[in-house]
Image (spheres, rainbow, N blue to C red):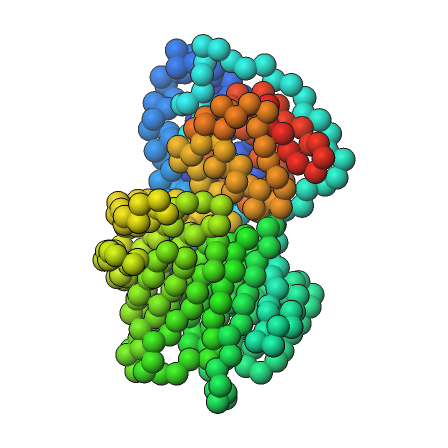
Length: 382
């Protein structure tokens, strides 16, 4: 590709007027510059280009956040296509700045997988008060009491409150995600390997309480003004979050020692057995098992909630933590031949609709890993 063609195509990309084939051409042209010295100043600075890509991606995500969220899966095809296109070019540009150019690693051909690793999808199991279990997945409908599901979402209506309010459990396996609307119209998006306990109905004027037993969930809480002032509480192992009406994300996985609560809108109070902190928008609290302190810091919200929009956003994240995220979504164990490799930090944006092999090949091609192979139903990173 000629430099002039690259500039024209880059401007079209920034205007959202390129297809996936043209995005690949941009990637290949950018990748041809292996050192800062080889970068053509006529194209502008790498830093400015990276900023433009990040800004476009961030605007795409945050603008979508302001829309009214109907009852639907995690992302629409239109929104996903826009962000996938942005992610494709941003990934290489963002992480290219961190490549060790003085000692490039040798690229090996990965072993051919004997069994296909599937991309995650909408699926869950619903456990009723009597212990019976219902599988929720695409193509299967379910209706009982005030609950109904088309296999891609679960909705509870507020009609006909029972005399004795029962609790249900919604469990999301590895390789799954699911959406549920509670009886008070609170919307909850659940990530892979998560479980939510909640009542099938609420009583106006009384505290609405649910429990994130483990995993990650994004809450869009129905305001207390619509429920005679009743507050909404989310309990997890080691903390409680109390809100009036807001949007926030909680990550409390069983294999992690820290609970993360990120506030998008409104105000929440995060507390444990000894402390309490008030969060305002764009703040995140962290409670660690070993000390019980509540640390609060400013964060990029779109990085923390991008999973709900069908994206993986990794910002300075060690490969071992990225492997944990990918393992949940693709329901496949990922290990490192050399444990030290897991500490290598990686920056990038990837879309969740890619096959795992495509993601690993992308990381390999930019010299963060030598190779990967599938062996005994797990992926080994080398």
